[in-house]
Image (cartoon, rainbow, N blue to C red; front, side, top):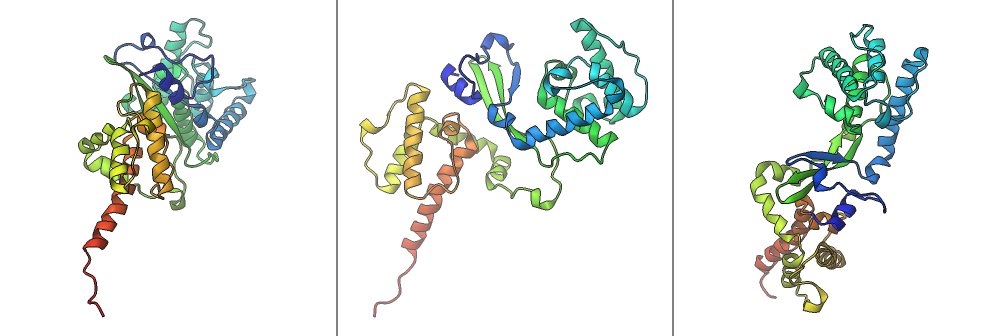
Length: 308
């Protein structure tokens, strides 16, 4: 993956280095929350509610949490929180100073938590490694589960979901994938989003969906639009053999502008998503073209009435 596209994907500010390949072992993965996800109002509200709940619970012990991402990793606060919630005593040292002793303490606490929640380790959306490595999503999943188990009347914001970017180290370099992480449940039917026809397509024929990734550089897409819409695209207007993400982005942006001008985009599509081979975004674009020209072909084939 090009450094430039990795910066754009993770929405990194200037001066912040993206993950290097050597930071991840072969096959290793790391999840990132882009700034747009971190600043999501419901995501921020969830953290605020959970922090207030923890601080209220641990008030008698004069423990204050200021950051769920920075304060929970070593097991100390989780140790005190779980003992108060479950009204039991864990056989773990109170103060753990070394990384090894902190991990041991965290292991004892999480094993007790999983037993209490009647979860096997593989079912849990958290682990010793993810919590210790300050994975905010894992920490939130854990705290939400504890709140639902021990204080079900706690008013958590409903339907909290955020976009997550997973970076994986492969033989050919760094590979990225976008996904949506669901942190809290829907409360009512009105919160349920309508079924997305493209999600159903992914389930029914995932092997065919990958074919649309061939449109990532914008060349085939531009040629297809030109052919179907009757546009003449001069070769100076786009890159016939793009050699960089920037040139691919130019092609895709031009294609989306042409479709928008023709009223063929039913919903916003990011050109970066198509360049990054996001199959769902590419399908939405192709579906708009398909619908228009299928309807046109149907009208053309309909018999006309007899002349007067």
